[in-house]
Image (tube, rainbow, N blue to C red; front, side):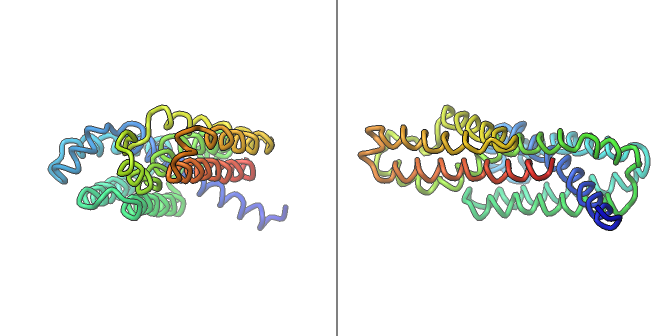
Length: 261
């Protein structure tokens, strides 16, 4: 590897690792620590919501802890501005989201908005030279752990909720034809999906491509032979589409992990 290539490599990994740390903090606050009651309160009361206040406090703590760990006491004023940027934009985007319907376009706009801000924050942190060399050294030495952690965090609840939102119109049609089918998927399905994606991640991430193929074919073979699925075309579509989304998302993330570690 030439000097220029090595320099580009270092810049890429510095940016990626810092972004991933901010992304993990975001996912934990948005998808793991946010209670359902807070979401309902946000929808009902918008900017006056106590649930929104609790949610933002979670982001304040996690994002602040991440930034402080990265920057320390060096450049503390600059870190404060980055902190305000992330939290302030998150607050405004979340208020906007409470006035929208819970559909895929608004869901994606919400999350893409947050991610764009995190990319901007990463760029500002890198170019400010506020991060100590010791931090860069530590991050590069532990980049594999950070990459694997980000993949695991993303493929669990965030991906489960994203798939749920994508499949929601189809699920609503199924409910209209058969009210015994709940509009929201069961907790069992939620955790089975997480387990499937975790298996795919570790299999492909370690070079074992046969396991995901067998898992995908085996699940479809079993599910499509169920009596309720055979009798209902919409149910078949839901099983095929949902399983494919889950497996493909895990496969793509796993391939990224494999090439990045």
